Amino acid sequence: MRRIMASVVGCLALIMVGSASAAQIQLSMSTKVDPSVKPLSIPDGTLAYGWYADVPVQVYEAKVVADDGSPVESTCLADGARIEILDAALTIRDGATCTNTEGKWQFVLTTNRVKAPTTLTAQLLTPTTTMDGRVMSPAASNMIVATIAPRIVLTSPKLSTAPRFPVTGVVKIPTPRKLGSVVLLCRKGARWTALGTQRTDPRGRFAFTVIRGAKGTTTTCRVRYQTVKTTLWAPSTYQFTISWV
Image 1 (cartoon, one colour):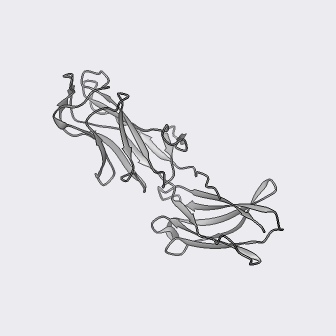
Image 2: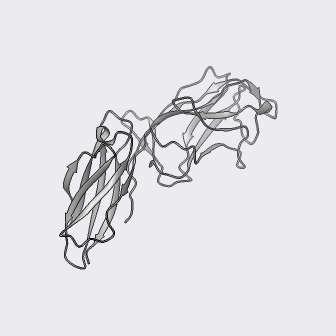
Image 3: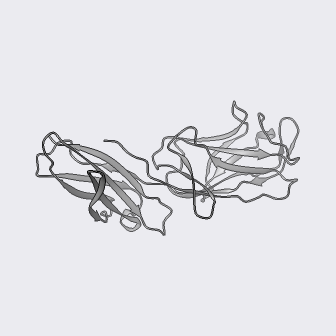
């Protein structure tokens, strides 16, 4: 079985901080670490990103400008000051006092990565200077709205002799029954055919069946969790192949 990445969106709206004489921070998500994270575009032209809920690493980058208008690269902030990534609950996800070995401000989230939709900003909360003496006043970045696709876990048996193969699984999302529905699609020739749609149970579990195919053939199917429009959770898709023996 293999998984395909769902299209997921994180909206980016630029908020300019102060005047040209103030420090500035511009936050973005790196697409270099995980190739499945791709910049997308939404109807109003706002920059957006997409990624799956269970990606092991999330990398964010910030472009920082000092009060004098020059970029802050290959340096550290004095007195232990940090640029920090905060979510909607103002929880600090990560922070950095110095740029990385490439001279960039980078924030790597692993165990503290974002697993549910939230806003993210980068902030410098206290006035400071760089190690080469440039002034940095407090600043806040643009805001990223992290819209994430939930993880789908298939729990079907490895082998079944029943006339209809059971396709069962779980959608890993809070209140899955309220936030969306599950669709089973299987490929017939060049087309995908929907074989059923259902709400999950309160725990996110779903169950379908597929009519057994001829011995020696395969059937490729997808389980798609389609979210309602009022949630920041994005649709998610899991693709797998059944071999008939």
